[in-house]
Length: 121
Image (cartoon, rainbow, N blue to C red; front, side, top):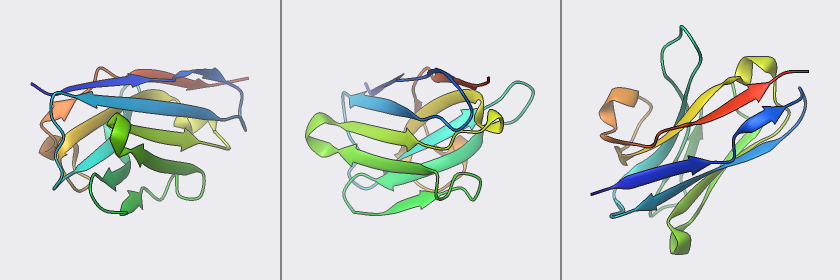
């Protein structure tokens, strides 16, 4: 049984920062990635960033490149998403997922419940 629990969301002003956490328990997948995705109301779930569990490989969506940083602490089985220079269009529910790699949400079998990020003045 794999469980992912996100935390760290909230309300922040444009230009502000937040750090999301994704704690993974039950099992880790050394051959795969942990990905962050987001979904705004009325929109499809979209890829944000991913990091490989066992290698120093990261990949970002163009919309967040240079503003967001994904990192991991393997000892804590936790992945982080540092979000800087936040914009109103970053408002969404953010999910972490594992069990696959790549940028396609449907390829990931394990998901957390999500954490809401709202960027507004």
